[in-house]
Image (cartoon, rainbow, N blue to C red; front, side, top):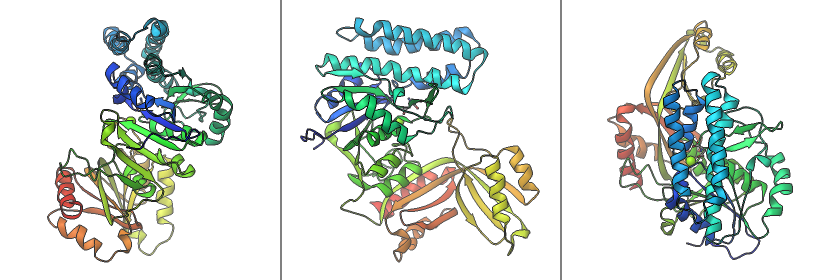
Amino acid sequence: MSLVDNNATALTVAKFGGTSVADFTAMSRSAAIVKQNPAARIVLISACSGVTNLLVELANGINDSARRQQLLTRLKEIHRNVISELKSPENVLTEVDSLLDSVSILAEQAATQPSIPLTDQLVSHGELLSTHLFSQILNEMGVNTIRFDIRNIMRTDSQFGKAIPQPEMIRQLAAAELQPLLENQVVVSQGFIGSDSKGNTTTLGRGGSDYSAALVAEATDASTLEIWTDVPGMYSTDPRITSAAKPIKEISFSEASEMANFGAKILHPSTLVPAIRQQIPVFIGSSKAPEQGGTWIRESVSEAPLFRALALRCNQTMVTLTSLNMFHAYGFLAEVFRILAEHKVSVDLITTSEVSVSLTLDQTDTGGGAPTLPEKAVKELNRLCRVEVEQGLCLVALIGNQMSSTKGSAKQIFGTLEDYNLRMICYGASPHNLCFLVKEQDAKSVVKTLHKKILE
Ligand code: ASP
Ligand code: MG
């Protein structure tokens, strides 16, 4: 593995996810990865595994004070367990305890009056806590480390819960506040959290640390972005679906973006946007087994196979709108989308026939359930057409290259799936992607069958 760059000016931004900083052992493994790479001078980390979930539960408002106490105790344990293994616990104990106290106060506030801004403030403590511990571990390993509050530079708008970052501001702030620190030390900071122009804490949405790291890499003109997680990179499909899934050593930005969007959970879907803007190669590897290597994502790759990978995303909601007025009419779809836009419904896939249009709804709910169409939107749509909503569906996405312009590729794909009922086939809009819906109970066997026929 040639992750170590000898070029003194090379800068790597390394991000470690929750499982890579879950406890003292995981943190030490991750710290060793940072130590062996002199270019890794900016490290962004997530909250310790499970912590954000606990904090979200507290932020939703728990009135039962015994239950609240239970969660607070669990939080304390997770962080105290790490502290108990430190050589110099006194360096972090006071600050960690004061952060835990602040969680407890905010959780009580949330119990009487929960709000999204309060949620962001509360959940940000997960990353603030983990960075205290991780920077101390790096210091104890002999790495000159400084902890940095990312909110000083991660400027976002004020859409709490899913704030939109402002890359130009982030670049300016990073030049002033972060660059000067990079001379001869490692900066340890937080993923996921940011700040609006008034100084309120915001978050980039669940799983947003990858995105944070990409934004920081972009703002500091980094030469590499490393995403360290608990699997050694991307696979031709989820290895839990079939053991025949193969690791992908190298993949293009376009293919990897399709994969991230269509359910490969390994990367937050927005992560590649800043990396592509700035042409920064991205490496994904497992902090548990760095020697296994991982996946490199870059602009151009040596191989562009027709079929690369299969992604699966369940909990799909399909909406079918039917109206005879659609026949040779104009403005029908415009009206449908006006109504959807008015109710902030984001559409994912779409297919049409003469008198009907089917679409799927984007997953916006962080809870992970199937998205729903707001009742008011249904009412308005009903004035225009018949509305049918179906759930219990999964989206299968096939990622590859030149699929829409390669003769016979459709036969190869669909010929193997004659036993299944495929819905809403979307093919041709992108050379890198073909997707369709199947019933939830068929989803895994569809992926297995297809994987066997075209990827093994
Ligand atoms: N800690 C946050 C979460 O669990 C952000 C992240 O890990 O990427 O969603
Ligand atoms: Mg993650």
